[in-house]
Length: 133
Image 1 (tube, rainbow, N blue to C red):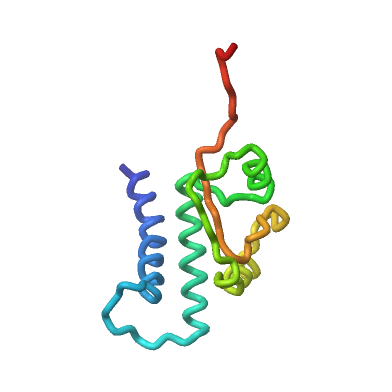
Image 2 (tube, rainbow, N blue to C red; image 1 turned 30 degrees about the horizontal axis):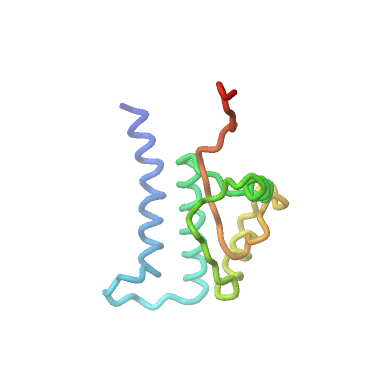
């Protein structure tokens, strides 16, 4: 099919870029790496994150907004897995830099931890109960 070919070609380039950029900081790569300048490394990390978020969005994941986080906390919709973040050990400069280079459509919608981590979710819909008496 032509549509399948178009889709494959369009996302094949993103896939190849993600893999190439990830090689730079892949922790289990034991092969020697060529020296990459700090500026080039930052560019590759940002491109990796940009392409990764594109793939997530195309897979029907969406970034968690401050409003959704507030609603989820009030209604107890957050994950039941225990999550403990050591906030002072997370790098805040990378995501700040990323958002300054690629600003979101609505910067006010970012959750309070936007400079530390990104959370994506999917499968959100209307919560309803029927036939309960």
